[in-house]
Image 1 (cartoon, helix red, strand yellow):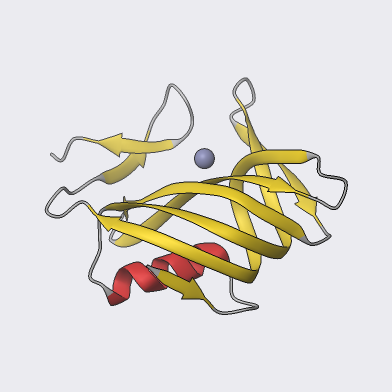
Image 2: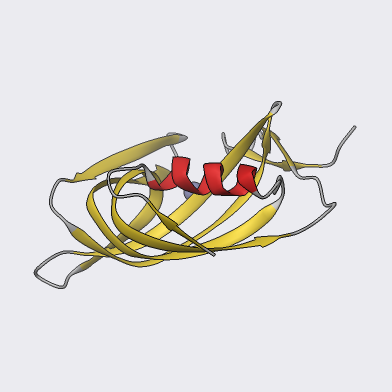
Length: 131
Ligand code: ZN
């Protein structure tokens, strides 16, 4: 469990907390509020992300994600549900999010070692069996 600093980036904060506990493969969830966020929808035909900037403060209703490896570096993948002052909910792949307040729960998956590799069919970096 961790509380992230105000003004920090949510993905970087999760990565930092994971590193501090030595977690290289895990899952996490978070709730709180963001001062702004950028989310994305993956265009499955074009194989590109279509981004949307949420420029106003939003409630971080839900954030689910995982920590694995991409190349030699840890990689945090997260999806979010966000609500603005009109209570509408927007969701998608989290690109970045500036923390107003965030409480994170991380779970270490131990010795499992998941590595992301390019996947031709989707255009994404997906988990692959180690060679
Ligand atoms: Zn995603």
